[in-house]
Image (cartoon, rainbow, N blue to C red):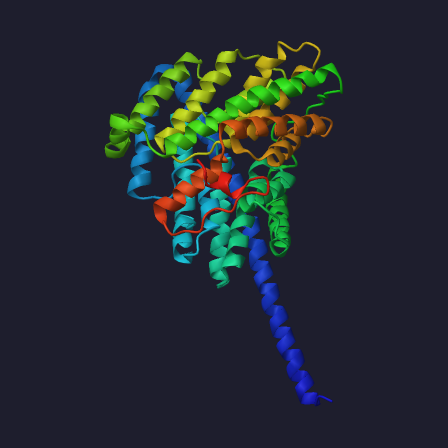
Length: 456
């Protein structure tokens, strides 16, 4: 039998362990709340950047021929000179950091300094009129915040630090779109590629706290508002097939083009980009300004307002809108500036769905728009569950879930025939090879073979 002194010592040690565990949990929960606050702040700044751009356009649309090239050139100069690692979407960096064993390298990529630069440079791109979004960068920002939490807690285990990166990225999506389920699915399907039981509770807690923070400060809103569109079984399902096929072809082509561009252009063009990246960015900006002038300014920025108007039937855009937005997003990415692909992809998909709707009079136009949105987005990211849940939550409409799933998976299958490797996975592997040739290869998803994961 243990002595009274031994029992007292045991209780004291247990209390110390419990106190330490609660301290870690409180710091972790605080980090998740900070992710939500950062996402809200980023959204507010992005809206202000768009408002400033609109003021410039209202004064004179021709000013964008100066503002856009100058803004993109400045963004590239700042990125390459002071903030290396802030370029691009941010999702590839988060994925790459989950496969790096060098924690010092991860800390450099997911530093708060780079996260702050991501906010500022993305807003600069939005002022300049680049076709970019804030949701992808929010993933890197969330991952950076939670990685900093892990460093503060002295977490030495690589698995624990990876779980925090996963949590931060998923929480970033949840807070950016106000879509908690989509944040969880995104973390599983896109970032982790599988659901690990030991990290599931961490991810769920982080997503919930970040989402609650966003709701508390912004209200329980839906990203695209509420729609009552339905797709009853029967002839209406022709829209599922049409959107799935066209969305798969266009989204798969988009991903294939971006993956090819990430490897560099051939010949003299490639040498020009490598030797004069700032001049190339300015050239991309000039092309974007020309596209913006041709579209009446509709292709500038995230495309959120256009997508919302199309979904609610408030505006009807010609086919040229989604074609020009498609091209503008490719040019924006190729310039190398920081900025995401989520919002522009949703806008392209909505424009495509709105165009398809005019040929399908037996289906509710709003439903066709949603199907086009989910199909194109699914084909781009090759994450059909994430695409379905995001669109379903953003429009607060569960009536079209089955049709959204069908269109999403059809588009995913078509996209895989055109682009063998998922876009973010390919970009993450490219990022890994550039910074660490000996890095761990990215694990294929459950629906991939190892050979497929190495292609692209």
